[in-house]
Length: 74
Image (cartoon, rainbow, N blue to C red; front, side, top):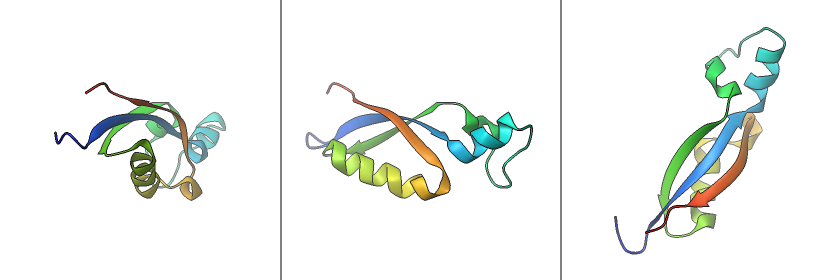
């Protein structure tokens, strides 16, 4: 890992999937496991850059919700 990059871990779930699962249904594209919290790691120079990448991969307009972010110590 470069000295300029840090690892950020995001806690994320999908609200659309969560709502459907609570109604006893399933999402047509995402697995039911997206109803639960999961963790993704992104390597970036800043938290803002990591968040931009996370939002690109998991857009809020598609139901993804970020609940926390931590930066791992280098």
